[in-house]
Amino acid sequence: VDFSTNSPLNYHTRMMGGDDVVTLSDINVGGFSNKVNGNLGEDKFTSKVGSTTRDFILGGSEGDTIDLSNSAKGGDWQNGNNGRDVIYGANNGNNGEMSILRGGADNDRIIINVNSKHIAVGDLGQDDIGVLGIARIVCRTDNGAAAQNIDETDHIIGFNADDKVFIPGVDSLNDLQIQEIGGNTYLKADNFTNGTTGMRYIAEFRNRSAADVTGYINGGQVIIGDTADNAYAALNPKNFLNSPDLGGMFA
Image 1 (cartoon, rainbow, N blue to C red):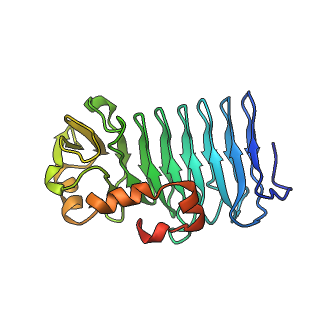
Image 2: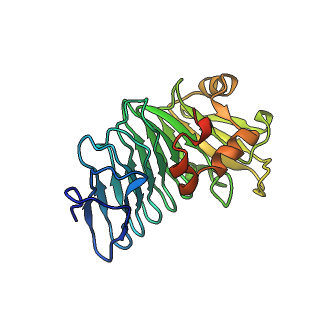
Image 3: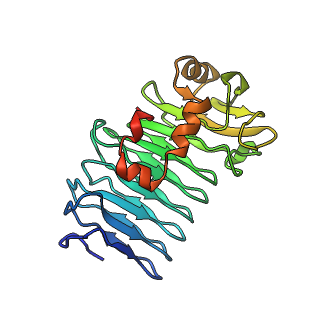
């Protein structure tokens, strides 16, 4: 399906069964120019080179690829929904509008490319979040998102000094515990404000030492409490459409 020569007029297009390949329109009509739901099948969504549209993409069921790396602006809502999805954000040059890259259910892979800055939310399942640019990562701890088993923890690869991680449901930095195993370091906790109980593994920082992660905490790169709770609560399409920077909460 090629929308690239059509004005999308803000219609919400829903694919049917089968594996669809969708090229998005690059005609900017304001708001979310392309609104597409892949529905069933293993679908692939791509944007036109240099596109500056804001797009709303829902993968639907099964394993989808939402690759908007051709876009030059950002401000997109990309949600893999169900299935094992792969999500790439726009190459927005670090100073464009951040997109929201959500894995949804199941085990997903989210990539923030070089020279780009985005908000990544693994949601449910064991997710890989690869950071080559600048990341604002939300690690959910509600509804079973934080793992009881260490082997089911989300992986963060490439976290550095410009990145931040938001952990809603944790009220105090003192509640965070650090565990290093084999050159990788886990953040975990057993005290939550959102009804989660027991010891839970929140995130694994790949190839980062306990000293590295301690430095992230002490340097203000790990955000908890009301700031993290409010930032997570703001992540819905209506808020994001009306305020692409979400009031600066993810600056």
